[in-house]
Image (cartoon, rainbow, N blue to C red; front, side, top):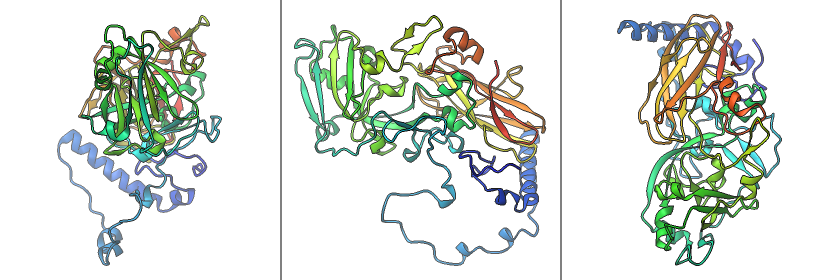
Length: 449
C-alpha cells in the first residue's frame, strides 16, 4: 500500500482521517472485517428492511471498560477558544502545493471531504487574501456612505460599528465561492483531492443589516442609482461594482456576524459585504465605504483581474454570478474504499441563481444517472447536501454528480463548457467533476468529456 503521509487530505473512507502507513498495517483484518459487516448490515437494511448486527465476540473495546468510564474527566474548559478533538487534528484548511503562495496574497482550501451537512465551521472557512488579513479594532472602524454626486445621495453618512449593530438585523444562510474555485481544472491539472478542486467554497449563517435599508436612510435617489461601489480597508484597496438591482432585492448585507459569533478576522472582521450568489471577491472584507453611482466603476479588480478570457480573445467582464454546480465529496480523490459493499455517496450542490431543484448521480461516467436525495433544508443560494446509496462491486467506477437549479440551468460537462468558454480561462468553472474508484479502492481525480 502506498505511503499517504506526505499528501495532506488523502483520506480513508471512514473515518475521515489521515492514517500513517504503520497504522494502516496494524490489524487490517479486524478493520476490514468490521467494515464488511457494517456495509453488509446497512445494505441489507436498506434492501430488505431488516437486518441483525453481528456481535463483536472477543472485542476488548466492548468487554472491558475503558479508562474514561472509570475515572473523572476533564473540567470545564474556561480558557481560550473551543477546540475540536485531538483526533480531528487532520481536518484543517490547507494551501495547495501547486499554487504560488506569498504571505499576504494567498488562499486556503476548506476540507469539504470531512464536513457534514451544509454549514462550514468558521475555523475551517476557506480564505482568500489579496494583501493579508487584519484584526481591526471595531471601536475605530467606520463605514462611509456617499454618492457619486450630491443628488445621488441626499444625506451622506458615516457609521460606527455600534451604530450599525443597533439597526434592525437579519440572519441568512448563504454559500460563498471564489470565482477561481476549480480553476486549476481548466488547464487539465488533476489536483488530488476535493479540498483542492472545490475547497474555495464555504457556507455560513451571516448576520447583519440590509444595505438597502442603510441607503434609504441616507436618501438614495432610487431612480438614478444603478450601481454601488464597495471598498475594503485592507492594503489592496479591494473595490467592486455591485448592481443596484441586487441591493434593492434586500439580499445584500452589511454583515458583522457569522455562525452565531462576530466575523473572524480572516473573514473580514468587523464588517464585510455579503452578496448572495455572486463570486466571493465581491463580498468585500473590512468594508469601509459604499458609493452610489449610475455606471460601473471598472476598478482594477474587475477591469484587469477576475475577467474571463473567451475563445475569440475577448474578455468577459462583470461575470459575477456563480452558476449551478455540484461535487461528490464521498467518495472523492485521495480517499480509499476499504472493501466492496455498501456506501453512501454524498456531496454538495449550489447555484448563484436560486435553490437546487435536483441532483443526479452517475457511477459509470455519465452513461446512466440516478436521482439523489436532497437533504433538507434546501435554501436560496445556499449549499444543499445530497446523498445516494450505492453498492460497490469492487470494479472500477466513475462517480460524478450533475445539479439542476430552480431556473432550469443544468451543470455542464467539461466538453460543453469548453465549447462555449474555450480552454484558457481561470474563473467560473462549474463543469461536472469525475472521481475514478479503482479496483484497489483508491479514488483519483480524472477528467472525462
